[in-house]
Length: 330
Image (cartoon, rainbow, N blue to C red; front, top):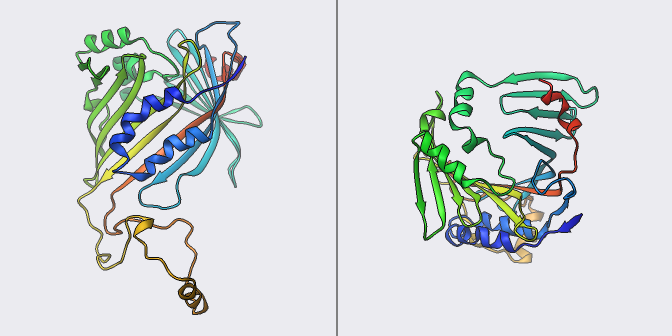
């Protein structure tokens, strides 16, 4: 059956985020608008099972920035498919051909990833998880490997967090459970993870946010907050219809030689020209068209980026196992 989803659950899920965040970054306002203007359709083959065994969708990726006027831009589209077997997830991404780049398919079982030539269906490259990645998967397991396509087992999350002695807290008034993950798992030679926190909505039993704070090699602090967006289909059936990530980079570094450049924080700060003034600039060759007007202090490398992923043509329990054959046979 095919259903056109409503937007009510999405509005409830993100309302608090934008009450707090909209003043800091106007580009975040593009998130609810994009979901409202691009409603997803869902085909769910309920004749097989009410559980989500396979999930497929067309993914459209947009980006926006407080350092660029013009709103969110569509940057990429690809197809995604996910299959779950006894807690093991197989994932497939189909990327279209681009200029000088042939179409590719990427498949993963969580520990091994293969890149496949779409025309020949031959494996071009295989990448296996490192020893550190294996330890991460084994230690944190269920908490970090979820695709969060629907409701989750919060009891199991609590049990896993307790078993690993993770820092866990529950705000019963806000209906939020938070689990902090050890930074040692995520730090590298060039990046020092300061914190990693996963929060869950205990009312609807859904992942709410994943927040990471990282100190980069140049000393800048990058905070990434990723929030899945869900939709209630009917009778409590809830599925993921996309997600958005806010990437907040702060730095004490200042670029030299740019102190005297005039800049604007928003389009509203730019003085308006009369038609006569504009025509005079054009005639003198002093007017140029700028597609994406740069905003903010050019000497400050800080920025707030927003990445929005929208799912459409969602198919649940429709695709067959042949889609994952190459990775399941490894």
